[in-house]
Length: 232
Ligand SMILES: *Cc1c(COP(=O)(O)O)cnc(C)c1O
Image 1 (cartoon, rainbow, N blue to C red):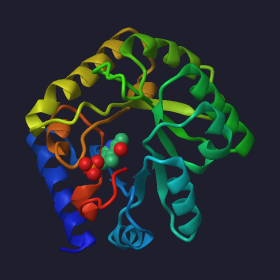
Image 2 (image 1 turned 120 degrees about the vertical axis):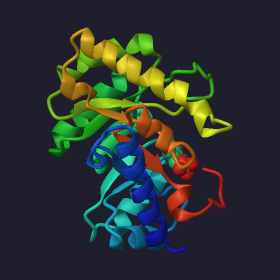
Image 3 (image 1 turned 45 degrees about the horizontal axis):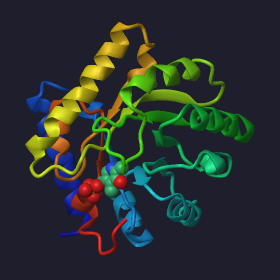
């Protein structure tokens, strides 16, 4: 199967999952996760209409961005960004989904102001408290919303989570539900709605469950591009 065929299949499944949850399929953004995959596959997906792409390593992402300046891609950074790289790397991305500290948020905003960009930022929430993972614990997130209100160029637009690798799609559901419940709680406590518009959750194996639980952005790699030969 070609990338275009697989992409069409994913779009169909996104639509079906949305409709089964009583949601409008257009309320779910598909981010094609191209990490480890070559530029020619990104171009194939682009030719099939895909515009949002995600990478998780800064170096690899910057190289791919430089090689696709002829395309109108919205690049998402999904992986960890060191604070000291925010100024240089931040402005290359339309969306940064891995904001997990006050310092990084402020650095990204300063970098965007200097570069004249208006990035969309998502706060990565660490729900499982896994030592090996990045993300802010839920208890720290309200401080990030407060700081976001003072941002001048960047804007916080929602939440992202990367739960422990599930054995079955259903295993991921409680994590997705937890992120949605946190979102609802923060909305009820007065966090401005535009800061909580997006819920980025769900990957190749579990995006339908994520959509049923309210995902507005799903991040799909292998189901579009095939299996990764290299570990990311
Ligand atoms: C790799 C990755 C994905 C996509 O995973 P697949 O299983 O290939 O769909 C999604 N989100 C993040 C943060 C990733 O690193």
